[in-house]
Length: 87
Image (cartoon, rainbow, N blue to C red; front, side, top):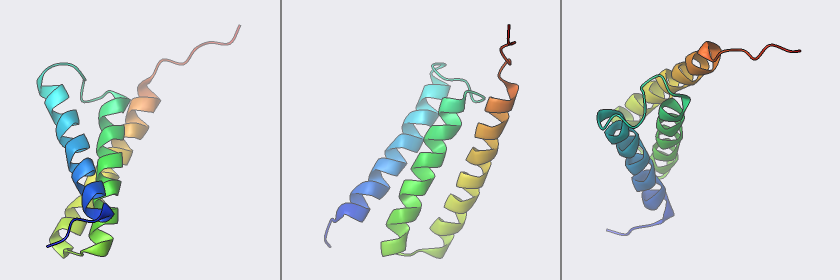
């Protein structure tokens, strides 16, 4: 078994998702914080790229949904930000 850059990218994506989850459990980042959803989206994309080189349908399907849900979370977090009024 070899370890190439797609494997490293996939592992980095997994690490990013796990760090984001651990940060929410530790109370360091709120689930509705844009950083949480952004970390999950980047992590899912990294895993999807690695899956391109070593495809697994079940893993790809969950990552597609992980990415879509994360994009929704990013959109919602940005939409809920208070708008600064122009003076």
